[in-house]
Image (cartoon, rainbow, N blue to C red; front, top):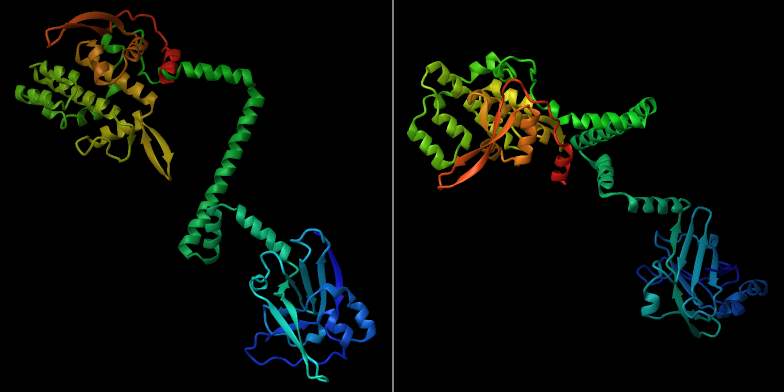
Length: 455
């Protein structure tokens, strides 16, 4: 916006001295600037020419916001008048500047810094003529003079920067300036962790670029496809394809070491000594899965075989319960009844260690669920003389039939059908899985159907 500039002399030597008003008067700490009406009568001719631009102005009263004016004689005033005389809102806009040797002041009659009293009421200034004894009263306007600092533009930039900062950044600034020792220590730790994460991300990105440059995109895509196809196969226990007997295809020692097998003696005692009444109670309470209940019904009478079967059934039941979980939030996966060595085996071999919300936790991923399913199938084969009802296990594990068949075929089981009678006087087809020699050809898992099922 354009303003014209004119100079106002503070007070010439011939100007009648204006006595300071008493303490508490409305004009206390104010400086009065005369208009050209008084200048023509009271000022020297050269000075009246200098103030001729004020013919259309009114007297101004200027309060200073930061203190009392000690010496008004060293003040230099400049009045800026709007050049837009056609706009009724802008033609009366004025900016008054006051300069001293130490500080500058600025006031205006428009905008946020203008005094509200100029629009709500009228102000007057009276001039007493000592010769005639008459006083003339004139309209006046108030300008609130604010100090102007040279670094005000820097402060405005800082204000803009503070507006763009997030709430977390503002809180960090407050903690850095006024926080306790504990808060400052936590702030420094968080900043160091953030810098560490950024450095790690840069290092990973650089390593990825180096690998891409070395192997090429085509080779990397081929490796990714190959790894994707072999993902579920890695979850399966080791298969001895050249074994002469079914029990040697998936060795029992690969499932449970001798130490782990001995640890199952105490928790499996309830299964070893179970009675028919207790089995009926299990069925009523639905506390165990169907495969476990059917296996308990057919426990052998031989003490050694019964003990082995009870241990295998207990471990299979534990695996099924463990698989039903998603996140293990405590060190004891299934409660205090599980031996420590078995609990460690479950967490080590069937979970993935992840980092979430500042803490480590054990997650049972989809690939780990497939691995648990494979171990359950092998245990069931050893319990049932290497032929199992896959449909019963599938329902106990809450799997789809297609997924169960994929895992069974990948484990090189022979699949057959069997008509099974139901308790409700009906029949249904069940899928049986048999581990026999020679083994059928190995089949890879149907990854495409898995992706379609997930999506």
